[in-house]
Amino acid sequence: MDNTGLPHLDVIRLGHRIDRDKRITSHLGLTARALGADSIVVFGDEDPGLIQSLDDVVERFGGSFSASFGKSPIKYLRSFKSGSGKFKPGTVVHLTMYGEDYRETFPKIRRDRPIAFVVGGTKVPGELFSIADYNVSVGNQPHSEVAALAIALNEWHKSVATKGKFFNPQIEILPSERGKSIIERE
Ligand code: SAM
Image 1: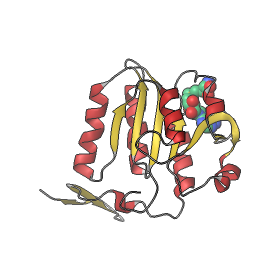
Image 2: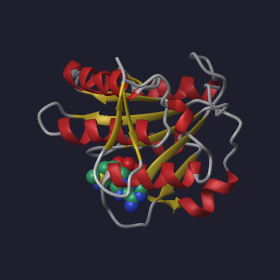
Image 3: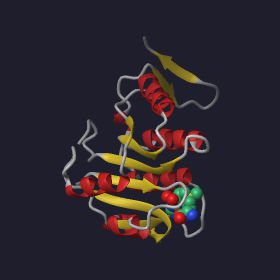
């Protein structure tokens, strides 16, 4: 649980390629944080600049979102499921265009356990389809991991308040009809 009382929510990004995916993986991290995830774990090429840029956003905009690299996604997910890592046993949701409709699947998923949303890049390992507790689609057409994650997290949290996750910010943006309303703290 975090300060909002919600179980831990991990985003797992597979197959990061340092030369091609810098921007999209960075957008995945930003989207994950902004839509209520607690962490992103990136698998593929190690890219310290990516982690640094996400850490900088957390420092400026608040909260405790963490970004890190992992070595073996399959091992990580097995341990996430069994609870042998740092969390209690969790649920793995694989976002894939081959899966079942997210609107039908989400109501069946337990909300009292840690949850990991997994997105791919290039081809995902076939084993993932059997490790995942749920293979979930956001429509059955190919699109983007950022779009799939954004829609899935929006549906998952629905009316759950995730605002409390962004505590202690240096910069806070207040919704405004026109222009920019920003509070800056030291
Ligand atoms: N050919 C790849 C595949 O096997 O799914 C598509 C790669 S797509 C560019 C990258 C990632 O976006 C996928 O691994 C998946 O996580 C996500 N994605 C793309 N379309 C999706 C959809 N319709 N529903 C859910 N996730 C999707």
